[in-house]
Image (cartoon, rainbow, N blue to C red):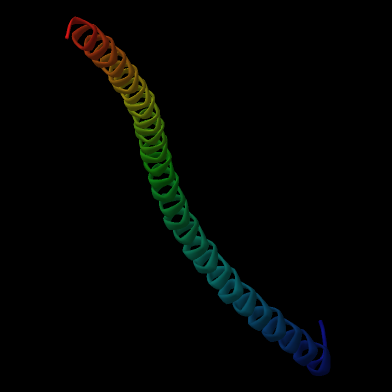
Length: 113
């Protein structure tokens, strides 16, 4: 049978082991709580990332639409300028023809006189 000193040492070791186990249990609960909080934060972050990714896709689509409209507007502007140049050229040609016809008419009318 153990003597009093040995029993006291065993009791102290048992107390220390119990306290260590309680501390380890508290630490485990804290770590589980932290892990759960981190999991919730990760879930929220994923939702934010998903929302941002969707917004990027929407903005990319909008950018493509605006680029297309811009290209169409540039094409329409270029076409309008070309048509205006063609119309100006035709007006100048018509002016020259009118001047030539007027000169011929004047020559004919002056030779008749």
